[in-house]
Length: 232
Image 1: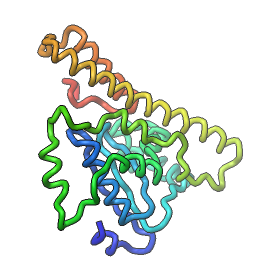
Image 2 (image 1 turned 60 degrees about the vertical axis):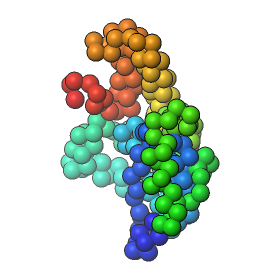
Image 3 (image 1 turned 90 degrees about the vertical axis):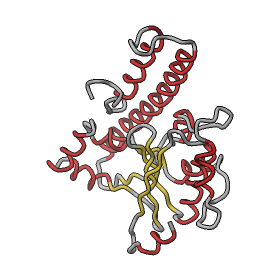
């Protein structure tokens, strides 16, 4: 991260993809803590449920809404968004979980800062994989770290009524995203319990089939298609 930060131009940003599935909350916290130690300003985004994107910069991170809105109306960005099932700008912006406060919440459960000398993650991640006694990252953790209101959005230049309307839509979209994450968590927990009880997984019947369908609906509500479904 320090090497990357040293290569950035003034106002440049560093982007880091981080998986959260099959990862302990401690290891994720260490990654975010290490990232934040180098980059004082962070914006946390979620792509596919479970995939985080950390954007770091030395300068405050602010999204200029009018500029992004203009780009989204263009054919190139609109086509790219359609490929991942995002139909409108609110759907894209709802992928933001928050800024420094979200990063701090995710880092709270973290261990030491990872360095080239301690090689922390090279050892801890394989050791924690699939261990029932180690708290893993769940969608409830991500939903809990999500800020209710996003302060990193610049609405300068928009009429007051447009700002009020947009703020309401974004707040609603973010609340829907948080509810969907919690719903996926509940469906995953129920599916694991049903599987442990020996229910039929091949035919997708019983409560496990219902929970899997519910999980797909929750993901669909976030603007995605479930890759586990045959139609994918």
